[in-house]
Image (cartoon, rainbow, N blue to C red; front, side):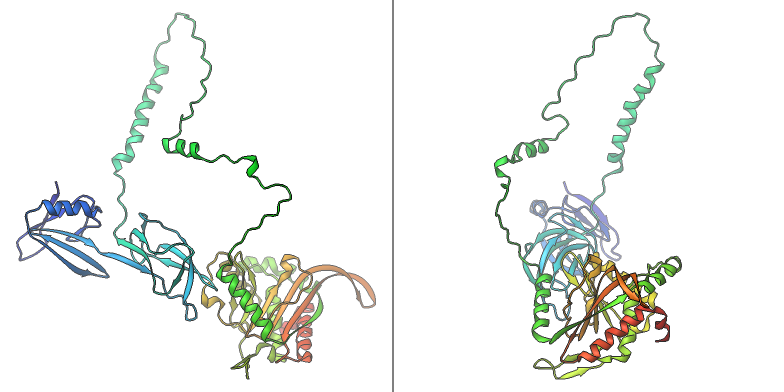
Length: 471
């Protein structure tokens, strides 16, 4: 029997009753929320009624309400909400649906993540616009989706019902009552008769289903046994094909575009890291204590590049325009792209206005961007732009390499591993920590003289960090 709840809130009208049908999805009656229900049972309840039936749709806030009137009774349910592919960026119109974090029947809260869409730059989260229950997934994983496409059908509703407190307390009560006899046993008088105790029976081997649910037993029973023949033979020549993700495809496209467009040339130099390492050793603890920032080498190289650009501003410029470019853009600001390796590929988040930062500020910005990259939380804005790139292959042990220009930029600085080497210092051979520097530049804009001058300036600032105070 459907229960009736009095409706007293309508002033000036005859009080009516609201039908509460078990399992009708998300009923709201006079601001009161009831249990969600299944529409077939609601239909049966309506069919049993002798009253006339009227159906209307009302708007309550941002939600649509389906209102079914049966004489003096009403059933109100929320209409389904369609979750669509959100706007991602001006240049991104489609992506690949990598995974659903929620499945049909799962309850989601407002702004909770439902799915993840992979684009050629970042991963985009799809969040629930309101609380409710997932009714249907309208696309499959690995499908290509476009902005505005329907993804999920969501039945709006409140939080799922909480189990009654009595049900939760029942196991505790049972445990308490079963423990009471055990506590009283020691107080009972022991029998004086010395009747021999029966010998303990050998422990029985557990039955196949002991302590295992029926579903678990079926899973174990149906689990395929891996035979030795199925294992790959030694010296086998198996192959497997894996589709490239969108980010890797985009990286490959950009690298080939750079090679085909820029007149790339690389110049090398060697820098003595002794002074910078001593500087870092002397002040890193104080900086960490005062600011919480770990002082590294990237901030020093970034600052050295900013100062060297004052003498060679073309390093911070770019060529733009049709047919490969016919205009040079010079900039008064420096946005440094920092290459960060992630599981999905190389990304280059940008430290903006590096010319206005000190060493600690640059180091903090790089650390924050690196953490966002590793946590897969970079946004389009974090990677947009950039006027110059620094790539540190030395963290992986690279001794020397030729980095590729990140178009439309003009140059990229490659840092490498620090190795102790014998070098001549004031006519004497000494062991010093040395690093190779590589500057790849676009010869269309930078001549050899400007490129070498820039790299030598960077070398001088690193070998004597005090010079940065004079820059």
